[in-house]
Every structure is written in structure tokens, then in C-alpha cells.
Image (tube, rainbow over all chains, first blue to last red; front, side, top):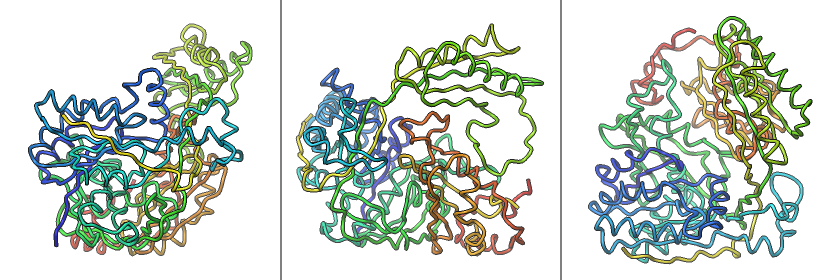
Length: 448
Length: 130
């Protein structure tokens, strides 16, 4: 049976670059996908685009393209990525410029747009109920900065049919980056729910790159993984019936095992029988893995049902400001001095009138991450790090939170060192739904 | 014994919802885990952070349980004040859950690893006791 080989070159915006180059050079690939768009990224990118219309896409786009495109061109590997963020056309122009600089003339770069539905939401904000809390988009008022629908595979497929060597999107469902080339190559029908469901399993397994080849997995003595410093990124060999084998470049670091595949299959899943995607409601509950050989795991048993009537939309809005400060204490009595430091800062914020709507006072190494659980008597750590964070309505007050930690140097308990402070504006994300019919992809081309 | 003896886990997040998969090293331990690692136990373990509910999905074919905890991430990664805003550490915190002692079936683990069924050939066949 004919198979298509798809590699995953990034699991998030800041991911390592060399594993993607390794895939393009030695992966025997037909396609290379890069998933680089986190929930909030597009809202931040929207702000950059407002300041400069030539920006608003992934900051590592040029570096990734420069590193991977020569091998992709040489080996006939087509690239699909959501690095367009808030500005796929500008990302396509930049990619074409990189290609020209590299001498890859004629390289065809497609920009897929249509996910930006901010105008629609602003027109009738009352129509868009929020999913996470009561209210509608209208309640976000002027703080609303971006609205992007999770589009499906249609725009990417149109670009592939149009001969694109590189396809750059904004917001699409993450698995769509990998499902689109399967539908394009195998000619699956857009209502072949079963195959679309199987393709979604493959896309979901690939989309976090190194998380299926041994990253986010190793636990020394339990789940040992060799060569994490040169972790290989995954390849899926997908057959026309939607079954697949997950593997990686021979000789690269990491390990593809049934256990790593199971962890990634369930990653970020809510109801495993109803994984809602723009093109299909995928069912992961019947998926089975079989190890064929070391670093070769077969996946079968995915299924699917009719797609949802609506698309999820991420709404980015200006939420608040957060100020933070940290300082370390070590040696005997470190925990007691850390607790004293927290009490001092708590009182200082009151005395100086910093109005914080939400705060955290904690000791990293004691109770910052491991809240609750079945506590047992852990021995006091040899060092702790005081952490105070607070949410405010203004940047000025956020800055004062970090300052009150820093002044512990000369005003607080004995031996406080390594103070750091930060303050930032928070762009947060909530979700709503939009009818599928309201969102239409459009494709533009740039040629190097 | 601790849950860590029998299972591994991975944490994901969707907005303010945290999700933890608990996967049996040996599929033969799945029924035992399903009996003892209930939504109520997990809710109690994370009582300090989960403000919503805990839903458990069973995946007997994978030998896995999927826990979905709503209102568990202080508003979600985009606005949480938490040091670990994604809640990535929560899965390993769940592995310290106390479960009744169960005779480890070392032989079956070794056999499964050799046949590739458990897929943990790189892990030691007999877990060290810590």
C-alpha cells in the first residue's frame, strides 16, 4: 500500500531547530509540519501587527526557513506551518525573501487567511457567548484585541492543489497541519469521517514533535530515554486506509515506544471519544499501538463522526497586569527565613497600598508547584526561593510588587540573595463559537 | 505503595482545565488501577487546586485512565499567577497517591517488555524501591 511520510519539525514556537533539519535531510519525507502557535501567541502577534504591518508572525520563522528550506527543496519536501500567526501574508513574503537569498528561485509560498474573525465579533459581540464563564464577547468591551477561528484543512488543501511548496497559515486546528496533506494525497472525501478521524489521530500524535519520541517523558530509573540532548523528531508513515507507523530518523536521540505513544495520544484530551476538530469529531477510544521494531510503533483503531456545526474561536483581550519578585535563602533555617520574608512583603504591600486582586505568596522548593496532595514529612530543603506574584489593574502597581521583594536585600531576613523582579501586561484568552459557514479560507501566493 | 509503582502519567491543559492521563506499565494492572484511582481520590489529592469537578474516562484498551479537572489552573495558562501555569507538574504529583499494596508481577513485566507489548524495554524490569 502507498504511504506518505510526514515529519513534525516543531512542537511549539521556541522549539529546537536542528531536529527539523535532520528530518528534512534524512527523514525521507513527503511533508514537514511545524506547529508553532500557542493559544495566546496570536493575540500578542496581533498587537505587533498593529504597530508594524510587516510583522505579527512567528519570530523564528526566518531562522527555521533558512535552516530547513535547502534540504526541503533538494528532497522535494513540502512544508506546512501555522507560523503565520496574525499575519500569514507577511510570513509568506518573508519566506519568499529567505528563499531568494538562498537561491531557491521559483519556490512557491502560500498564505492561508480567513481565521481572523475580529470584525465579525466586533459587529455583534452579544452573539458570542463565552465558553469559560458567563457573559458574551460584549463584556470584553475595548479590551478585546483578537478573535481567531480554528479553521480546518480546506485552505491548506487548496494551497497544496495550487502547487505550494510552503503553506503558511494562521489559526487552524493543530492536527489539520498533518491531516491536510493526507486528504490531498489520498483523495479522502471531506465526509469520510472514519479516515478523517484516523488522520486526526496521526496529526495529534505528531503535533507536539519531541513529545512522542521521548521528550516530556523521561523519568530516570523508570522511563529511561537515550540521547535527549539530540532528540529526534517524529515521522509518521501513513497508509491510504489511515493506519500509520510512528518512527524517527535512525541514529537520532530519543525513543518511540508504546508508552510514549500512549502518553501523547491522551495529551490534552478531554473526552477521548469526542475530540472536537473543525473537520471531524474524532474518536480516540479504540486506538491501539503495536511495537513492530525498536522505534517503530504501529497505530490503528482511530475513528470519527460528523464534524461540529461550529468552530472554536480564541478571543484575546487585555486582562490585567502581573508583578512578581523572587529571592533565595539557603542553609539552616532557610524555610523559616523564607516564610518571614513572605510575611514582610505581605505587610509591605498593605502598608504601601498596592491593590492586588489576586496574590500568591510561596516558597519554590516547598509549596509553589506541589499544592495539596497527600503531604508527608519532607525534610526541610537546603535552599528555598521566595516568590510573590500579584495581579493589579496598573503597571505601576505591578512593578511595586517586585520592588517589595527586592528591598528584602537590605530590609529583610538574613542572607537573601539573587532577587529578580518582573512586571507585565497580561493578554489572556477566552473562547467562543462561530458557525462553520461564517469562516472561509483564502489563499495568496508569493513566488521566490 | 505509591501509584508511581504501577503507572506513568502525562499532564495537559486546555484553558482552565487540567488533564492527567494515568497509564499502567503493565496492562494487567489496569483493573486494579481503575478500582483504586477514582475521580474521588484524585479530587481529594488535588483539593487545594481543583475548584471545579473531576471527571474520569476509562480506556481499557490502552490500560489507561484519563482525568479531566475543571477550574484547576487558576484561570488557565494565559492569566494564572502560578509558577507552573500549565500545571505540567501535576501528573507527577498524582503519582505519589497511595494505593493498596499489590504483588508486582515482575515476570509478566519482563515478558511484556521482551515481546514489545508494554513498550518500556528501556526501563528497568524490576522497579527499584524508593
